[in-house]
Length: 353
Length: 75
Image (cartoon, rainbow over all chains, first blue to last red; front, side, top):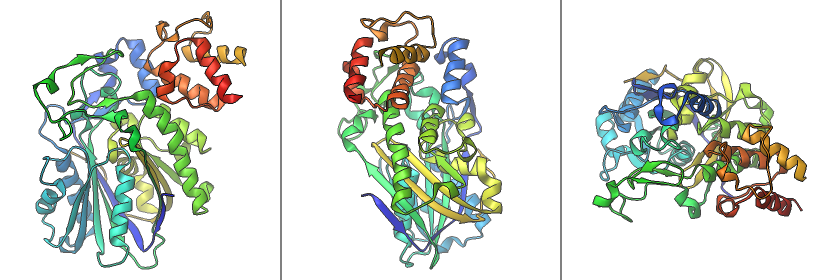
């Protein structure tokens, strides 16, 4: 069924960090002439993107910065952090796990449980499910979910079906055990038979990289990329998103009798505006309840939901109780939704590095 | 259904004056690009409640084939 209610958990804070460097789609020759650029921006909603292009900033650096900021504003003692999860597909090394590196760099206790989770656009949802499961029985009390990606490093600058969509970012979400808290209501799903829809073909251990991996090829749609670049089957992913996203949200609502009218914000994975608007209309929700950060930051993979919370809902998150439904969908293919309530959480302003 | 389908198809192409024939290979249209493709998927879903999976869509060549597929799925 894919539904679970994880009780005794509360969300205490969220923070985000992106690179200072901005790429502007309005000036991107790859998109074509002025008319084509305008059409792209109107459809996708993506105007600028913060990227690591030409810099040494990596996902773990952004997650580290977001985590330090959040720990400091929460006033947490680092020795009390029992769990650190790192959700990403752009970790520092093939091995060791980046969560181990971050435990050391953040100065967390050696007793901290650390683990990497390899997921993209659904990653924050699955990360919430995992950290919730680890914290719910009260043995572990405090946890950090670090989610981020440098997706632009995996995209061909000559692939207009993917390059102009993505930005980079890292986020931190703090969760705590609290007896009696309503917790998280979650739906998760996977369709591994569609894994070819978003894939970097070489460089893993199925097809290890060879000299050929670096040879660029031109494809039917005009894009040029090599086998260490991400292939994104746009139409397949679009079809998937507009079908599975709404069903995940309405399915979760039905399963736990959640009245969607009472939800303050539907925080969606920032794939592109065209897709997210389809999802919004299918779940019959007004535009005022669906915030966007993709205009400024693009599709930031597993960062996109917390990044949207920080940059578009920060004041309200800090100031008043909210009911939030979030939904992520993408590489895997993997998708899911999380429903939770907040009651004035720590949410520092976004950091640029 | 045919008339409604053609009207909507022209809307997606953003060219109301376009002459659309059943034998046309729509991928050869000047107006056709990856965003048009997404718009067709969305239009079929919105207007006909039909979702054509990518594997099936790839086999469809002409406007007539597409209409036939929609008719089959709404029958």
